[in-house]
Length: 328
Image 1 (spheres, helix red, strand yellow):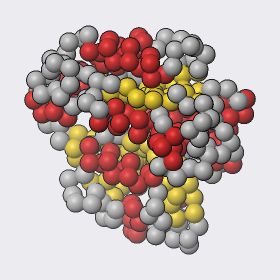
Image 2: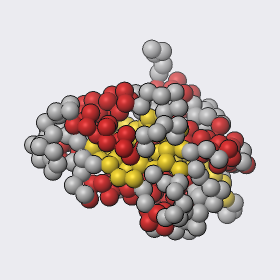
Image 3: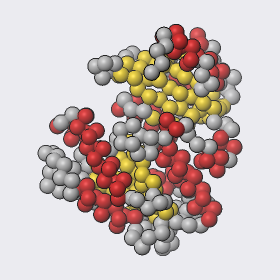
Image 4: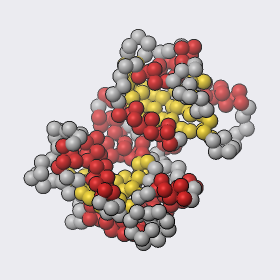
């Protein structure tokens, strides 16, 4: 490892072409304590106007953004997160800010700082295809805990394949699989044991989806996402049941499991369809999530296919009809 002084590292960060900020995680509201020149140029604010303040000020009055909730959840969990947000400069000019936050912990494991990486994505957002194909840096593509695709990279690949499926009119499949009662597992044992459980489950899921078109990523916590190209006679939710049984067969003991004899299990939601031009990717994702939650409501350790109501509840005009026959 290169042995640089503190000033040496600071010079590297100061001169980075990507906006970098550091926020104090030990103080309420996580005030900003450092910003490099690239971030100041991106935001349009002078350093004095940002020091000691929460960076939500960049959102102005534009509070109705999906990324806000994801950021709040990640901050509450102390986990890394990548979102795309509409931000505003002091003169009111809007820019799209791609944000990656990562936690910094001390030797005792306590969260002390958040590091944020920011970049203007206006060039990438000129066309959806360019957004999907622009590509993430290699270090952002892998989930550190499991070695699977990171959520950020998985979403990028999913977006790419979504546009291709819309253009070419072929089927695409998405499955979410979530570890049941993972929170209580962590409470009984500890987070390190929970992480070990996540890794074991991840290996089973990866081994179960081995076709060339299959992609597996870690969505968040104990939730995994699988992208499939529908060229098989087995429906996505039927195959998910096979995967659920393989995880159950690991016999990972869980004293407070609420399903299947005190062992770790999964619940899954899946959908396979030919996406119309009117159907949004976020609606597709939301419908799969709702199917997964329905599986948990049925007692867990089960898999559910999406239903037309799952799409309708998202308010998408392009939702598949009950008689369309394109949802499985």
